[in-house]
Length: 166
Image (cartoon, rainbow, N blue to C red):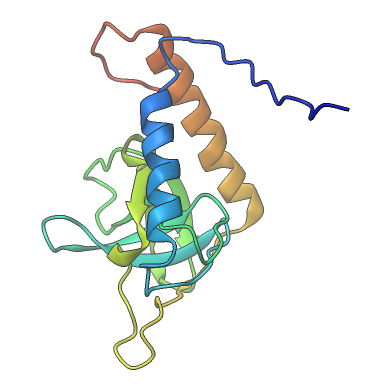
């Protein structure tokens, strides 16, 4: 009796980024033992992270991760202190754990992966500071609008334009 062969069928599309996925698998396998910062995330959780310009920003976690995962998909959120100034993104209203006075805007156009080492940590316990969690309906509204943005971008990949989903 011979060993069964495992066959994977791969369809090549322009949108498929197989090299990035391969790089991710290599990094996940080699860095799993190197990562000292091990924590899991749940979708909808709110944290702060340090941007490349060293500014702090609140974020919403968009995917569950395990301790061994180094990267997480996030959506930055910004406080809208002045309703007369337009802040691009999806108005998600109040987040009581962060502010009872000002609304927040989810920057759908800035959704991206970050490394977990960018999370702002509690200086004593060395774990990310948890600020709260979004309602499921708000989380789903962000994902729905992100899906619409991605679909529009894929349909119009050779063009540059503003996307309005209202």
